[in-house]
Length: 210
Length: 264
Image (tube, rainbow over all chains, first blue to last red; front, top):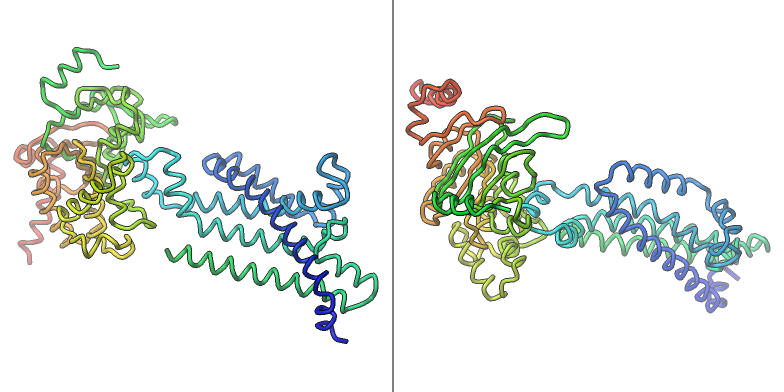
């Protein structure tokens, strides 16, 4: 029996784990965007604060994922074994690319365009929504794309702390010394990452062309 | 708040725009504009002429409150700009800059419609006004309204910039070296058209340039600035006849070019 047959015979569990996996990614990305976008916008003109926040996000990014999960488990409220801890950790990982690209994307808008917008009597809010965000959108989306792909990858490790997802197959397969079981998790996870990356990339290009 | 005396003074002498003792200092201490007193009447084009760093652009930004004066005041229609809401003030002052600052993600039509839209005009009125403005600056609407700024030449972009500044029919127009980045032929063409436009529209215009030729061509009066200070205000003829050393230096640069013409 090859791995493909195995995948087919266990398709209902593979599907359920995939949905679980995407759920972890979607929840963590949602939190990361809700925090990262407003924070990034607020940091655009505050250089000192921006250095500190990006520095902190950078440190979080360098912590190995399994270690980060480990750190979070003892934390009250968000910690413990299970999906919530994993979602918090994934959101922390996604924060850096989103923050960094929000800052650089908005800072990269042509200063002449900003000067004209202010000079013609746009309010700061109109400037942000009608000029800065639309023009920064391709860079913003590039950050979201990187964050999502990282998140799909790191989410496989979330199975180690009982958060479910496609990592369950990988850890089970390693324990059983069974390649077919490992591949039942690894292949869908890899496919997910590639498909999400390609489709966000296509969306990003269509935005840049406008 | 402006006093009654100032208000009636502003209306009596007919000046649309005045600066009094206008001074702007950087937080670090450098003075960019120093004790500048100017008056511009309706239908007049005042050219601020000076070398780089003479405070011309800073003066424009003080007028539309992109910068706030350190000392002195600016009166628009006799009323101190400090008492205006800056957003409302700017919507009543057209602004054209060298790099055009057109929104690259908007069509020409939408760019020109910017201020009328901010002012919540009806869409029917906006559409009519955009067509009128594009025709005014010599861009056939059928051909240009749907284009993006990236599909325009430098001269066409600046025409859109002028159309955008005029769209809400502001009484005052500020122009910061609008033609400086254009090739000489296109520049001459736009200068000619701008001159006839300025006489026709009766706007109060402050025009910044470092090009003495342009100053003489477009200005009804020329204010010469040097390191943030006003050297003097001249009619084009007075400027050519003046013996003031700074003015002589500018006139000499003009003659140097004419000398070259004779050589060829």
